[in-house]
Image 1 (cartoon, rainbow, N blue to C red):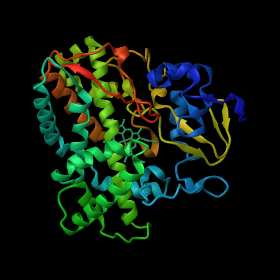
Image 2: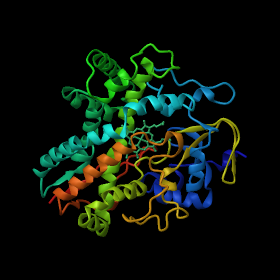
Image 3: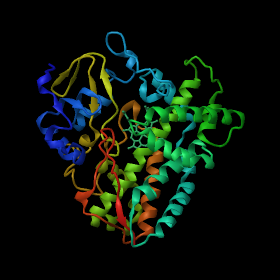
Image 4: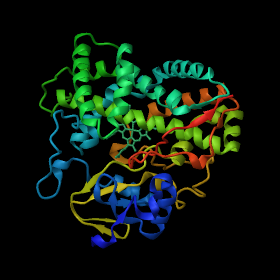
Length: 405
Ligand code: HEM
């Protein structure tokens, strides 16, 4: 049963090594208390699940819910905000989730993603050209490459006009800063509302137009095969936010992993057909998303040997599951040829990442182009000097100084 004295403070426990070495931290927790009551940074009391088998079970258990209106004993409301941008699939449970996801999936198809590949290649080449100007000097790969590539591709996907992209790029970065988030939410809501109206008036060949056209019913009642105005706005928000930092992290941490394991990088250079498998192993190894988003127990739930009471927050530690030796032998070793079946970098169950084909395509393009263009790229600082952002949801580097050659 819940015992407050058992609670582990995720950040102060283990002398704060949580942010700098989450895989190491989770390895110890997985051994000592695989389903543990914790104090989550920015979230308060919760439970964290660290074994691969338990994480997969939790992510498919309908008693672990997302929609806060289903909170045991009468539901909870979100803190009131001027703009409702939360009415999207990742905040809902079936059958509502099934409806929202089906509508978006119809428009956001793997074919639409594949059509973007040549544009992603052009964008990557343009960014690499710009960085080639600093050949030999030290440059931050995140500023010059890993960050601008996904945001530009997302703008192409959604149909954000070229003139607005510099502003959007700044806005999505500011959105992640707690002190800026309320202001940016309001500004983005105004912007996206106008953009939706513009697409309705003059649809283009982009995802937002496709969502508007799926069934143009902005005042729907939330039950049919269309998105209400609030759902559409929330969905645009979610796609931009879900598709940005995650992919930045995969490109940056993936590059770092290859720079750290020189033999594996050489293996990939020799055989570029390894690229899709390499991206899967880099997902497993780097875990751009550290843990799944919060869920709560709608009743008592047995996970592993632990009974989690009703009305508790639960987090499934993706970083930990993907480094569980019961699932992946020698998990701390990067091995581009390993069998990565069952990795949970994109989650598992009904909320499995809808943007996975896009993320994979972008990582293949980004890493393939980078390695081909700079055969002697190297890390410009000792690895232990690199800093990871103190954000619990994501595993993201602050910067990645490299020397291009
Ligand atoms: C390397 C890049 C990415 C990673 C590692 C990643 C990871 C994840 C994970 C772990 C989840 C499940 C969260 C949970 O169950 O709590 C998720 C859901 C989602 N992701 Fe991604 N993601 C990536 C890129 C993208 C992109 C590019 C998009 C779209 C532009 C996207 C859109 C979504 C959406 C819409 C969901 C919610 C699905 C649902 O609720 O049914 N993601 N992602």
